[in-house]
Length: 385
Ligand SMILES: Cc1ncc(COP(=O)(O)O)c(C=O)c1O
Image (cartoon, rainbow, N blue to C red; front, top):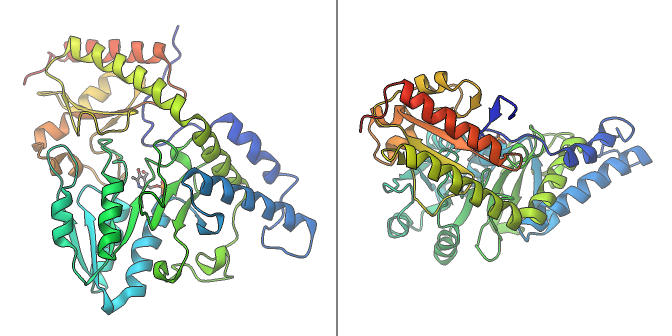
């Protein structure tokens, strides 16, 4: 008998892996020192936790440990990257390029940049959710300081052509930041190979704790940021404030597990998702997948149920935790701007739900979820394409 409710919202957050919790526990009790206390053992052992985690996060993306800045999460990292870079380049290069389907924290940080007098270009995406590289190339000028494009979209799961974007930016002498909250630890991301200059990382999307993340910042003068948090000069001066050793140790452990298990987890999720999709599509061939059919993270399925209201559907499948198309920014309601950006009408966007699977998802859970979904749609009168 499958245990309910069933969690299928892995893009919103992930359950913490108990192996991560084991690593964190000592830093919540006995090893409670301030990692920035340099005069005694309590400080040194807490500092050692930061050192280990820095190396683990760096290893996952083939970066150097000193290029990892710990933050409170990807929201902070994205704000640091966009505002920090634009502030450094100022009037010399006042132009930023991003994409209209980015997470709200990138779009709002870009809007803040606009309020500070910088010019922002919001690239459109095609019906598959991907950017057009020619269009990106055409928008870059000698005034452009930064291109910020996410690796994996949190709503529709599409994977942007990160390596090609990196090559293009490097060739044009423009910095490249990627919001990798949904990609880090899940797909291979190598900062040198992909010419990534800045990368945002979140702990709670990779089976680690909430409230911690990192910004990868390529070393060197070129990638200087104006710090957004002033204070004691922690994190080499880039981000002041006492670090949380337990959270940071958890982030490091989570990154390391993701790295070790990436290939095996990918193929397991691929198999689970393929079986789940075929059950749904056999019963409901009218379903429409949102986003590129192949160039997507295997743990995400964003699907429209033509003729149905997504929120009503969710109300009919109460013991299955998925999200409606609009769920990514808790303060914002209405049809998803991401789905509208790929050309879905308001009605179709409102008929969509996002299903996310991950490390703890089982075959039995997905069997049960498919049955519940198919039954709920039938009860609601079926699909009306
Ligand atoms: C693509 C993306 N960027 C940024 C964030 C924000 O991350 P955090 O919760 O760590 O601030 C999220 C989480 O919803 C996300 O999915």
